[in-house]
Image (tube, rainbow, N blue to C red; front, side, top):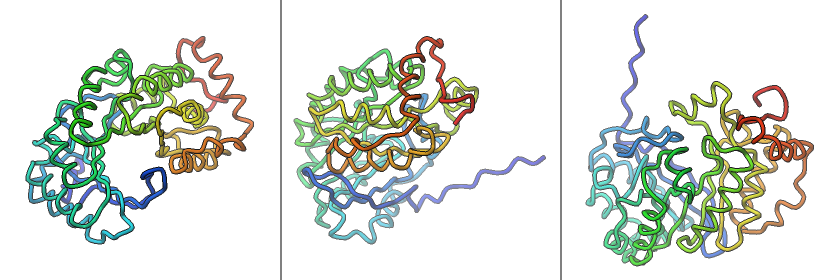
Length: 327
């Protein structure tokens, strides 16, 4: 049988573009998210990340064309623009300095109030953030995932320490930017209860270095070591109830969450009956920071979730389901 040839990606089009609402100065604001197709992350060793498969040898000209296509319909409603890649916006091999400069200049000229981008710590310097912040309000997102060096290294494989993260966050602030810290709910090898405890502890540890925390709920991305664990039944994505527990437990810094793939087999979920309502409340909390949105949520599966918290560690760390099926 002839093996199907993989189609070459269109380097003139971004991976994705969409509009949503984001938290800006305590209120909901229109935002535009752009994912550029770049060479991808140079690290490429995280157990949970399927983004390396999106990488392609895009040139500086390709990236400029992608950005222009993505922002062709930019309007005054787009007060926040998030420019993401499959790796680090500040990595010069992924996004050349000339392209970065064009993007920042164009967004500032368009009157965009805030630019958000992601970077690993090793590429963050005060000078780079200062150059951006001098043109436009700048937020740098850093994927800490967990404040535990053991969890970050052995469960995820991030390749940097908590001290590296704190040093990078300090450089962002010295450069006049703000820091968004990504935390991961339920890295591999953590039970449901230990995952909640890790997220809460990590939020406390990261508060001093963060202007906002983004709680990312683990989903199963294709071609990853985590997918192999999931396929043989050694991993279950987090319960949405666990996310609610963490969000209610953090009040020292704004904390947001967007439960990607909620209610699907590969995403965070409860029993299926309440997934949509709980995910909606989580997204509402991200815009209001009001824990009251969770008060009226209830479902019979909540008792099963609580039992999982009690018993999962006794089952040799295997992910218990609410019944014998893999939901």
